[in-house]
Image (cartoon, rainbow over all chains, first blue to last red):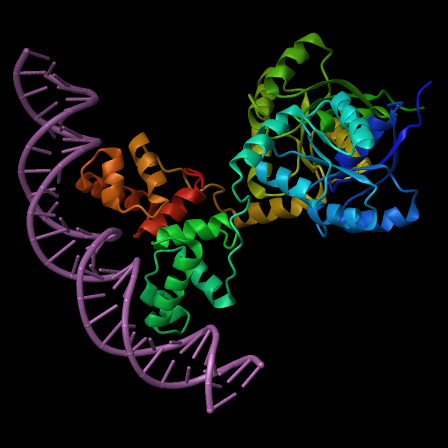
Length: 217
Length: 217
DNA sequence: GTTAAAAAAGCTGATTACACCCTGTTTTAC
DNA sequence: GTAAAACAGGGTGTAATCAGCTTTTTTAAC
């Protein structure tokens, strides 16, 4: 009566989630979990040791090799495998980035099991699946058509050091002393960074650097 | 041969994780999952509708009623129930905060199923369980004995608005215009906040406010 | 209701650091 | 040798910082 079960793999660094999900999906008569892996590197190893899955459920944030890289690797070496991204985050950026990396769909971990199974069967047949919760955001993003990531700014070690020292009450003169540079050189650094970050004040500089994860506080 | 299974409940807003974990744990001959809930409010409802569990696996970040509040409620209304916090984060703050709220242990979602079952049985018998990964951090924190949160600074709505506007290239004059206040009043705000945050510059102010989670960027 | 105390808002003026300029030197790479 | 980069000096206008003070509003006591 039923067609063949869909063979899948699960890649997620949270062991409890990974194994729990495998247990849950194996209870279904539509899904068969071939193997699971705790990051992209582990996945690459296990793909060579197991039959190829039809669908891979892919977490995004993982150590060693994250979901973006892993998905790209899949699409390069086994383009017939469909990737369904699975994440906690409902933000635009990771969703779009995963789809750009080659994922055929995106599910939230808040989803119900039945919806996930529907997504897996959907993606297996049609190569893509976008659920409603996410599609609204997608549409908005595509319509706005604004570049997703403010293009990463290239900075060197000295500029980074300067940025870190900027996150304080230190005056530029004091920063110059700490970095063993002339205050005028610091001026040059500042102006260069103002241009790069499109800002006009030290505060704006710090905020921009923080937003781009260049510095931490 | 085996003793009675341990009755537990799972509280987590990620449906897939919750149900997957339930499926996984129900496969064990030591654990019986009585019910699950997607947040603290749901948990309170279901506790009244089900037999009392011995142990509750509790996520921290949840909508409507988070892990801290939920654990406090448990300890107030059913102090005999042990709470095992379950989270992705290995940071000090949430761990300590959950233990303070009354949790008897803390497990990372990166853990293995066997470790979780060990933790559950451990906490059921001894009322607490701290795994090694986390205990190192705990010890460090206790040894350092530094206050976990720099004592919260009290600020009013206007000061908060001002702080938010400070995170920009806007000059104080422009901020005064936006807030419909005299630039001199802005001076007063700034000076008051400089004192509260023990800083001397706009940059220091923004950094301090960010550190205290008063503003987001 | 009056009134004193406290808090918030507003003002003046002086000093300092920041933002921005142009120019020149040293270092590095090809 | 030349070009690019990093570094450095001098100088200017503006915004930020800071101290001290007055006025208005709020709070609370009487």
